[in-house]
Length: 361
Image (cartoon, rainbow, N blue to C red; front, side):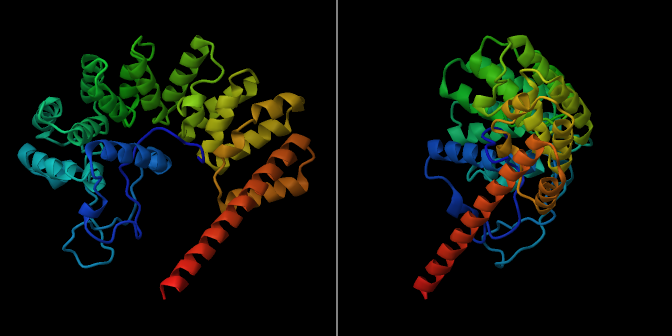
């Protein structure tokens, strides 16, 4: 999503020319800068990471490796490391430069992980140590967040509460926002969604936003409706409107959109986050509508949730040519115009790159 601010979670590393030299060249110069870098990277990569997919190719970060791209070990940590000590050694090394590849190995590290309990227990102690740097605390707490285990999410929640108004609370809250897990994790987080601790409460909403399940969507919608806030945390970049829903969640969101109430715009944005299937659901709902004024109000800021994709562009062009529903054709034209602006911007960037290359020659 073009305005996807939060949340959310960067573990997946895209292949390509992102990292051709040593990992040390990208290490932030200070603890605070590293924390900012991590948060910005999470926002940029939220869309690819939430679906839980893993790129087929990744970049070898070994500075001694021959330049070029090779396959890295894509197995979960439980298959890579043979003991808690071995896993901890890798994590300590990864924390020095916030190595995303090591983090990725610990995304739900595997069901058959005999050493995991000892590993997480030691990790919690390392995270709580007074000698740990800000980056180390952030790295260790993020591994807890991406474990998919309720007990580790509980550790993060308890740590936020215990840290009070210290910087540690902010570090642990940022990690909690990157949570990955099933509905058991959502169920636990739901118990804290009305916390009087504002930092914890918003981090919980962000963490649930990261999940794409119907239960997560229901939890966010029910909470938003209970608060009576039509914004639904949208101004904070979290909440139902920023969710990337699973396929199974789409019918529920469609029902919310068709309620045509003050919260329907949140469901529309979530549907558009999904891609062309969600866009088709939205356009079908607009086609059957008799209230154009409400529809236009419901679509405010919705364009920011439509990704530029060839199949989406073709679908919109067909709507413009064939739809007799004014709101549908208007929205389709608006999106296509936005796509044209993106095309122009990309073209200008390419021209600048060419000029830079020519000047270097």
